[in-house]
Length: 110
Length: 145
Image 1 (cartoon, rainbow over the protein chains, first blue to last red):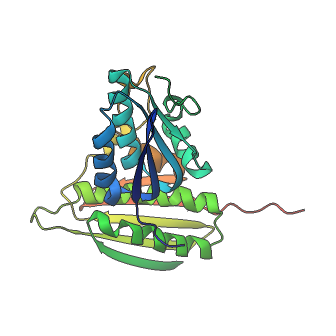
Image 2 (spheres, chains in turn green, yellow):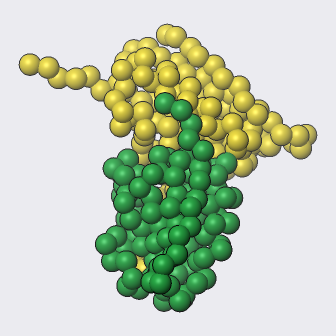
């Protein structure tokens, strides 16, 4: 096991903006994640998709940032979804109660 | 009882070292992958509080002391900082998962303490001198035929 540095890759298509996050999203990585989201969270013209398929760790810091993004997107009536959730990450999403708000498999709908 | 100790600066960039050392200790004790992942989050949450709220009155960045005590079928992790105190009692009472019918009603505060309680078997907080959080996880014994 080794600590995996947090990274964000952004891709954009005609319909959506995708943020692929990988590595460990802890307190040290929080600012990087927050900044990456701030760049795109107000883009109501396209769906925002957070791909967590390569995410190896998250805690309340990262989940709190996702909640903030959820609230902004909801206010804008703009689509936001989280996809490719690994089992260990899903467990935390379920425990914290955020799972019901992640719009999995409903990309493109508000 | 075996004890492993770690002392780190109370800054976020050192928290990955805590998770790495916890992985090493917990693996030796035979914890499952899932239990280790749970403990990594719970211990990190305690350390997050120490980084965010653990600054001593001197104003200089403090240190966090982590100890791993194993024995009697359990792992006892203690996270101690010298800070002026984070009101664990008050936040513990408000610790809960997210609740709300819509995103606008969601309040993300209190998730850290809630996760500590949900992922560990016991959580005890002592604020007599700084803050010491004790997290306990019991090794699940495998049932074999």
